[in-house]
Image (cartoon, rainbow, N blue to C red; front, side, top):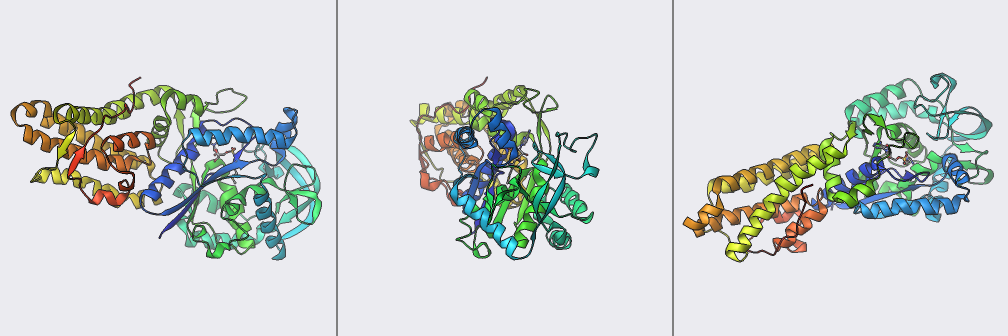
Amino acid sequence: MHTFYITTPIYYVNDKPHIGHAYTSLACDTVARFYRLLGYQVRFVTGTDEHGQKIEKAALKAQKNPQSFVDEVAETFIDLAKKLDLSHDDFIRTTQKRHKVAAQHLWQNMMANGFIYKDQYSGWYATRDECFYSEDELIGGKAPTGAEVEWVSEESYFFKLSAFTQPLLDFYRKNPEAIQPASRYNEVVKFIESGLKDLSISRNSVAWGIQVPNDNQHVMYVWVDALSNYLTALNYPENDMAENAFWQNVNHVVGKDILRFHSVFWPSFLMAANIPLPKKVFAHGWWTVDGEKMSKSLGNAINPITLIEKYSVDALRYYMLKSLNFGSDGDFSETRLVSTINSDLANAFGNLCQRVIKFALKNYDGKITKPIKLLDSDKDFLNSFQKIVNNLPDYLINYRLQKICEELWQVIYNANAYVDQKKPWDLFKTDPQQCQDVLWVLCELLRRLGILLQPLLPEASKKLLSSLGTEINARDITALQTTKKQYALQEIQPLFMRI
Ligand code: MSP
């Protein structure tokens, strides 16, 4: 069986979740569900990043001890995962014991292989980014991201990142799909080509972190700690990553702001520990609000839970995935969310389901039998799904989630046009048999659509498939190869309300 392992970044628990976090999670969840639909054995993992100076400071500000502070905020992310209806197989918290074991083991391996040494660090640190910057990287006294920096001068363990300049370049030249989109790949390769400097990977002025093995004066730099969560989730070090079927096909999905950590630091740490490198890192874009970055200080962060309670998680998921080419930036607007719900979800999709199922229930008691002979045009219509299924693997590999939405909605528009053209309400009066044939084609179409929409609209597709009488075990991709001879329809619950 094919395996697929997909990860979200683990979220900092210094603040409440906003729609940026929801976006990464929903996109990963959708991809995970599509792979499961295609018959892959999937592991989908998300979690929280709970150590480091940023969290330490946030706890101090909240006048709480760090552990009770992170316990509290982590709950809001666990709750978000529930409200987003995520299908994750695991939720990692970096304060868990299993994670400490994994992170320390990774460190010891890198150390044993000679890639860690002790020295003195002097340079700038931006707590907001949890990132070290050299003097020449600063712009107007701030980090290139705009974050405030402070001068740090302390004893530190260093990682020999410089030793990986050439190995990384060799790897990326051989594996151009290891970073997507292509523009990001080019950016990273250019950065590596400029030469990598050794990296400070411990702090002795920060207390809130995983202790460096055999040195209680230092905690690990939070990115070493955080990145190793991807191994924790596969039960490292107990499981050997070189032989782990999930690790062979891992995709890390991240926002563009943290691509460098994932495409330069992470593969270097892995090489230093003799662990095979990830198949792909995909960097998605950023959501702005009215053209501005979301931030606490601007007070413009949008709470995804409010939106879910108002409009449903299916609506939020669909709007976010269909509105942006995955990889590009976009501006979030509740007005556009509402107009998408009205046009694509309530009018085009919901209405199609309602009008077909209600009509069949009213006039045929919901019993719709397969026609003795199908028109060629109807066969073509039903076969249009096969093309989408054939394209799916390619779209998924390239994270073309918007394209998948477009293709499925094209089928929905065609189906609505089919209803308008066949006019079952007139046909019923003149030729009830032919009318039933038309309804069967539509039920069959809705069944196939319902199956393919499960990853995008988990709740709505469940309602649709239940009303069509499609058994739970007949909802995978192989069910598209069969036709159903007899439908016994049930009332359909409303899918999307017009707003
Ligand atoms: N803790 C690190 C990740 C460690 S992974 C080993 C982190 N956390 S974060 O909470 O700040 O961000 C998590 C993810 O949310 C990142 O991928 C980030 O890009 C994404 N987003 C945060 N704000 C966003 C938007 N406004 N728009 C889209 N995604 C954004 O970084």
